[in-house]
Structure formats: structure tokens, C-alpha cells
Length: 433
Ligand code: URA
Image 1 (cartoon, rainbow, N blue to C red):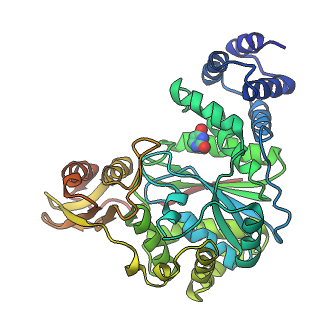
Image 2 (image 1 turned 45 degrees about the vertical axis):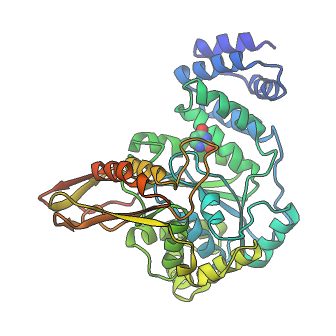
Image 3 (image 1 turned 180 degrees about the vertical axis):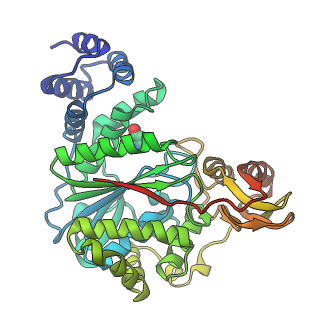
């Protein structure tokens, strides 16, 4: 088999056979297919696409390129959750403890931020002492005793994706649906859970800007999951506006704790409530009729917060900051951004708000950048709120005053106002299963 012939076939719109896909992924990982040939193939896939069958086979070949985690030492049904990412998206910190408190087992590997805001691992590392690198044995033990554990990705999980993503990043082939779907799902399948919940976000702060693209990605990923024999469900949720009011690593942990106490923002709780309910249905611990009430009960009884506390303690984190979030280190400087006009907030550009938080030190412009865990933004006014000129729109938090002017200008430009009250924000658009 020659890679040259496979490139030629895909260039002309042909369908790659199962053994051709396996050959291509294996030979790329072992170095016998050079980057220039794989780059040509990736571009051909961008133009010609892949069938559902090809995409599924490529995902399985990628999954099998490294370790596939065996979670069988963990008792009960393990459900994984993946978000395609967004601004203020701290849902894992809320949904995982709720689901764990209701009997779902969560053994989750999470990533650092790829874009302008931190990822779940970055947020957890803002808790002093929290360890994201555990031995497999410790990881399993913690899930068996507390119901959940969230750790960083282990060394040899899906090496094919690491190599392919690095190439896609420099060949303008990241935004290609079968490549995105296979990249995400190969990692989820290698992580070993029994079922997978996908939170596919849509809007300016999301990877998928339009509803059509979000639905196509969700359908493709659900089909891959089912092909691999894993029950997979996707929810399409809103990311035109940041989720909740806090953006930034420790600020988001604080908001997650408030939400687990039943005192969080309504939009954040609504999204988390439906994601947690869906995880419980996937695990078979609840049915459609009882899941939402079970979520509410886990929160009002304090069981969900107790589950978060137990995980933090088990992973070496300082539980006193969860018990009293005032104990989190505070940013050295604060700055209030005020409205320059009156009206209703009718648009917030989530992507620009994410960029403003990155400029304050909450996210990375480059992979090697260090984060300032206490930096970020607290939104005082959100979509639909009535604002008078001079009202505080948001409070910026940073380690140095000189970071404020640029971030404040970016944030101001992200808001738009109208005289009329806008229609209510829709948070959950569709379920794909
Ligand atoms: N996230 C991933 O893990 N892979 C992609 O290709 C895009 C987003």
C-alpha cells in the first residue's frame, strides 16, 4: 500500500477502505509516512470530506494508536462528559459532583485550555495543592471512594491525535468536521468510560459558530460513539453569551461552589441541570421523569457540594477554600468597566470577552504562557439586563494595573445595547442521540 495512492484516491473524492485508514494512521504514528504526505491527505479530507463509516474507522484507528484505559476496577457505570469549550464554561466542576452524588461514576481526564480561557484542569489547579497527576491505582481508588476524579491526560493517550493536531494547526486544516470529530472522540473512547455526554456549544464564544455546524458535529460524534459501542448523547447549548458571571480560573471555581450551594447564576444552573440529568439517564440511575428532581435534591441536600469537597481532599487540594471561598488568593488589582450609554444589553460577544480575560492573565495566548489563577472578569450586567450610563458592566481582576486599559476596551466593545428589551436567551437548543 502506498500513501501516494491514498492521497490520490481521496483527492478524487473516493472512499478510503478500512485497511487503508488503519495503514495510514499506523504508518503516520510510527514515522514511515512523512508530515508532507499526511498534510496533503488532511487537505484532501478538508475538501472532499469523509463518509460516516470512514470517520468512525479513522477514530478507532486513532484510539488504538496508544493506551486505551481499562476502567473496569471502578464499580458502577462510568459516564464521561466533554464540552467543545466556551467562555465561563465551568460546567464539569458542577455537573460531575452532582452526577457523582446521584450514583454515576466519573473517571475523567481533562485538558488545559486550548483557546483564550483556561480548561477544567487549569481551574482545578487554582485550588492550592490540587494534584492532577495521579497513578492509575490512586485514580481508580478515588473514584471508588468519592464517586469522581478529574485528572490531566496521561502520557500515551492517542498519540495519533497529538501528531495530527500539530500538523492541522500549521496547515489550516483544524476546522474540518470529520477531523474535529475524530480528534475529540478518539480521546473520549480511549479514556474508557461506558457512556459519553457531549456538550456541543454554539455561538460566538464556541468552536462551532453556527447552529448548523454544531448539529453536524454533534451528529457525527454521536454516530462515532455508537459505532464504537458506547452510548453517546449530545446536547447543543448556547455560547453566544458567556455562561454564568465569572470568567477566570479561581473565579470560576468560586462560582461553581456557589452553584452547588444553590446560589449560582440561573443560566449556569439551567445548563448544568440538564447536563447532569442527561448523565444520570445515560448511567441508568434515573429516568427522564425523575432526573431533574434528583439533580435539585443533590444540590439542596448538600450532597453534590460534599462530593466536590471529597474529590478535592482526595487529590490533595486545600478544602478550606471550598468551605470558605473568601480564602482563595485575590487578584492584586481590580478595575470597574462602566457603561457609556443606557439601554438593554442586547448582545455580548463571548469570544471577545474571552480574549479580554486572556489579556488579564486568565488564559494563554501561547501554549507555554503561565496563568494568573486569580485573574479574570466578573460580569455584573448580562444579556437582557437594563443598564444606565455609568453602571458597572463588569469588574476586571488582574495582577498588574497596566493590563486594564486594553482588556477594558475589548470588553466595552463586546457589549451592544438596544432601547427595546431583547427576547429571552435560549440556553439549550437540541438533544442529538
Ligand atoms: N478539540 C479537539 O480535541 N480536537 C479538535 O480537532 C478540535 C477541538
